[in-house]
Length: 456
Image 1 (spheres, rainbow, N blue to C red):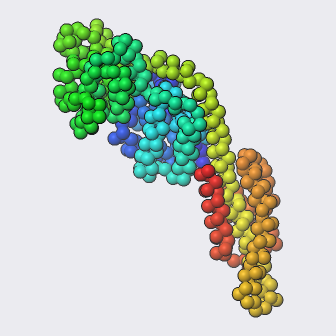
Image 2 (image 1 turned 120 degrees about the horizontal axis):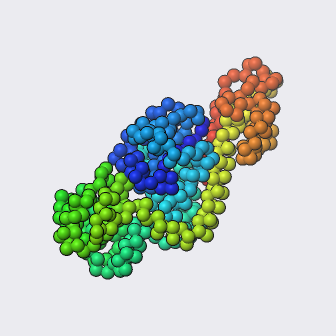
Image 3 (image 1 turned 180 degrees about the horizontal axis):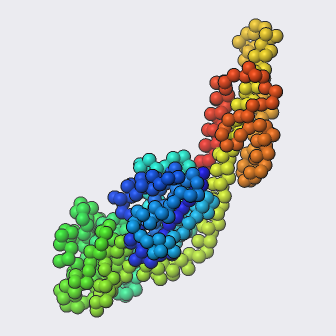
């Protein structure tokens, strides 16, 4: 089984391309199911945010066509999209996922939103039936690693996000936000974060508009703002000095003709638009109008770079921690992978023990229940003592990733590391029957132990 991750993000593609492959929250389940239907894909999930679209999949062979899915699903020419796609496999894919969840690959290093977005993508994939054991284990480990980064480093010491960077940019342009009227178009999490920062900076009146009016009402109440019905969006927008737009609209909702009307009603007083939506809410052509200033999410990277410089030492500490967590994940994964060989070894030994007890049963005569229990305990204890060295050797070889040694050990003890079924033990009596209930208990215990180890 191969782990594959492909994607496009703010580092590899401009917003003009990213907005063409953005997947809305409503469309994410359908897209996830479509990816799961790609031949060779056994498990998958899709992360789609304003800065990235990434496909993560467990595939049966390297030939599973994830890039072809991107081209087909979005109807894009490979010549256009291909140069912007990155691809990771196996351990590199694990490392990338861990870095994304820990916000080390974000436009603003340390922003807290990405972990929630990855968790939401995972929940959608699970609800869509696209996740099983392999990705479940991987994602839970990624979430644990991200939590460890935030708790053991200072990367989350201040509330940094795309929204806060947007507000920083507004403050730099206006000098002060005191008394400025702000219009929040879209009442999602990003708008809520922007509102918190704006209030902290002394913004005046806050207007809120959203297609779902109840959400707009709740946000307006929280920030003592005023709800603007979405159908009155254009009439009210001219009241605002700053418009922060973050909707899920598939096309721009603010166009040059709207900008001209705003300027006329404002008697040419300037307006500042911060567009943090992907696809964009504000037509870039509006920025050509004298008196209207438009900044999209890619324009925020200059401000974000300052935050990244300030956090370089903290980010370095976080990178070291993530590297250790990735290695721990692979060690645990290798221990889980060797479980079938250990189970086979236990089953083989148990069959031999049972066969030997049957062989000497006539010579033992009639035993009391206490004597039978004593014989069972004695023989089982001997088997466990003999099994301990080979089991530890297998686990150590797995932790070290020494496949050659694992194969040699399996050959020596005539067990299979892949199937969990034992080879016929040399010298075993032909009358050895099906695996006993005790052997099944031992097998279950070993698998449970491996699962417990994988979650630590």
